[in-house]
Image 1: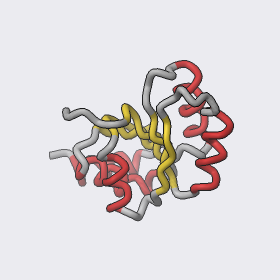
Image 2: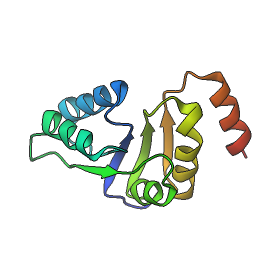
Image 3: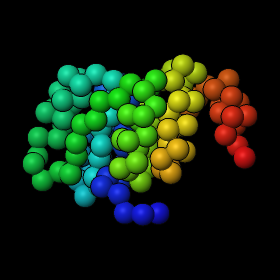
Image 4: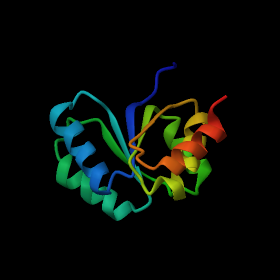
Length: 126
């Protein structure tokens, strides 16, 4: 895989799980570069202020809604891995997976929704 600016994109970074993922990465693994991404710029900036105040961290905010495929592809194209924490996956998950595939970026999620899992396998398991 080619060199990319960020190691990880945490999509859905301002949600319950996304915040905890970001906090963990910032506090326990400051060497990992992180793109925090989601639909609400104000919440993303507040997250950065709360958890990433250390200017030595390589972290940045990216605003992109789950239905904005071009913005998602541009964001994900800067990252080695997308960690999708934005649920419910049945509403947004397929768009996020498609953007990761289109940008050539590895994808990981926390899916616990059998219906979404089945739909994703049918759509993308080639």
